[in-house]
Amino acid sequence: MSGKRAASFVAHWAKWLVLALFGLLLLYQFWLFGWVLWWNWVNPDSTRFMEIRLVELQVKDPKAQLKKQWVDYAKISNHLKRALIVAEDDLFVHHEGFDWDGIQKALEKNRKKGKVVAGGSTISQQLAKNLFLTPSKTPWRKAQEAVVTLMIEAVWSKQRIFEVYLNVIEWGNGVFGAEAAARHYYGISAAQLSDEQAARLAGMVPSPRFYDRNRGAPGLASKAEAILVRMPSAQVP
Image (cartoon, rainbow, N blue to C red; front, side):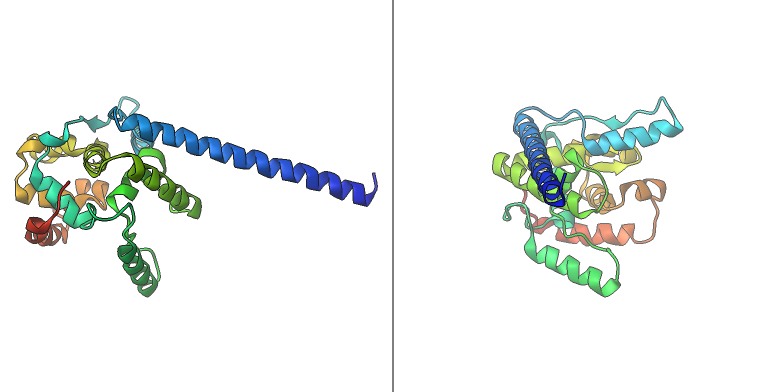
């Protein structure tokens, strides 16, 4: 085979390989979108984050199980809803999945610190990551997170997004969702959480496993106080 024919052969197969990979990527997006449609009506029993954490726990204890219990939106304390809005995404009811000002501020803060110290992720973005993706911070994962965020915002109401978020986010070592968190930390249901308890739980969200191990960690009380002050201004779906 001449050099010219060999180059043509390689280019031909390279083109088909690229097309095949693109087709697989497209099928994967349709698969994800199918789950987004399904979970608009059916409550997710598990998430990618839950699966990852369960495997980690079972490495140490094969019998380990997650603490989680789904509760309807109306059975979760409004205090907790307000606390999470002001702590994680105070423009949640207004944006369409992304808080561009928040992202810009996070990038500037990271630039000044010389490392990633802030993410600027909205509740919708956090939910997309928890449902389908991993904790990694690769460009691919961030890009896929953005795509899933758009899917969720296009199909679900803000209340549905928040309901699922409240029920699936990590709140401790093997603890997922508001009901499990309320029982794990306070021995009560999510509906019974006071404003102070809700503010403290909201302050734990960025580092839930750390705060589970270090419940008296310096800074958590001050974070909770700051959240508590802002809670009356929260706009809850």
